[in-house]
Length: 599
Image 1 (cartoon, rainbow, N blue to C red):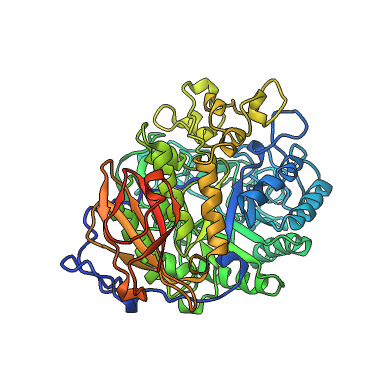
Image 2: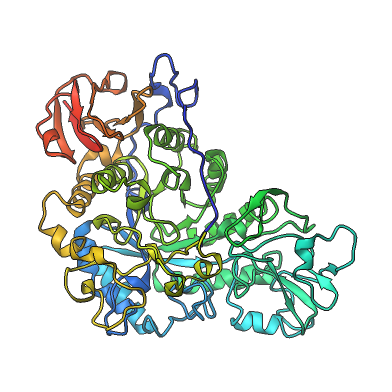
């Protein structure tokens, strides 16, 4: 679920920071601050998790829409890539107002994606390919067509009357009512406050049958559940057990910080200006990340822990800073989410060593030893190759992003097409937009269609995605050169770079189990770090040049268990780096990455 989120770029980030153990003067990283090597075979701690948007991955029946059988057909490709788990975006029955994030039945499969038997076959086949399945789980809201909401909206006196967030509102002439609230007047009543839907307009929708407003953080067709009602929690937990009993490996929890709202319904402070829909920009302090959500997550974690197989909870956690991120693990108790998504690293507005050094460093040292989860691409944001690319060095830059994703200590979450460099293909005309937020926000907000176009498998018909005359979103022209078939045959392709790095994660003891420490904290252009070695292995250094100029670096790992300066190149994004044999005077071409073992 899209969040209106922007992380500030930190221009300096070289000031004294005891938690990291370096200073502007010395640029030295304290060995005491660095996470130590550790051996833990819990699957999700080493995993590469691959998000699949089911409409767009593979169409098996020629209707122009991807489906579950299409995913099953491509499991061999995913296994060859090195994927450990796939996260499938919502495949449940839905009116598709928000393309599946408006669920009308949590315990079935939408017919356009197949049947429950198809899902069962996919689950069994994935197991044969050593791939786990993680399902998207939308707990904040349902579709307004869900039977629960239909009943709740019918009257104030029914079994589901208190399952959603309802309010009488206030009289339109009451003191303090804003002009914005008055825009949504019904029968002399207006919404109880100024809260807005992320997708535009008031977050309150009037229902004549109840003469009340219901709250919707997202589209009006996505009413928020009332998590203060224990019956709601029981029903949602029972639904999660339905899928856990089938054997899914866990859940990615959509919009999870939004479960609770301020019970006093206080107005959000205005922050200045207006958004793409023309609404005032507001804080979200009363509708997002409220403390009570952590009580629910602790109970959910206990429920999931009762299942064998290390089932996992992954959170869509757009948060303001690393300190807030740490709370989602449960702090030192680690009894909440195993893997809250760290959006601070990969969804910034720019590409700089300073930014990545700051946020990767914080994730490694300020999470009480919990496992970071890094992500640079998903179905709600422009693709990283487009966000970070300069139009000339896009593939080279994408290789540096892959290096960060796959050689740090973090669990890696990627998105279909990132491994081949699929660009964002934003519609150029409003009439071509399918995403409702793009329709209402055009031209300032053009929607999310651009990052959801069909997977590009071949340079042939429909890019190998479908045999339909028309696919649900058009195939971008880039498919002729950017596709799996073409890149598989090119040893220097982005796809083969991903395969090489993923294989190293599995086979190299240090990349699998090693600790982590930053190097050369004062370098404005080069991000460098060492994966400190477990017993019997050698340290591994990673150096990434994030500038358009060649840079020469010397990487001293003597403070982190490395005694020599001889190096063996493990991976190099540029040919000139493949013969590097020393950690001294390594010449990094523009936008390049080098991974070497220190002997």
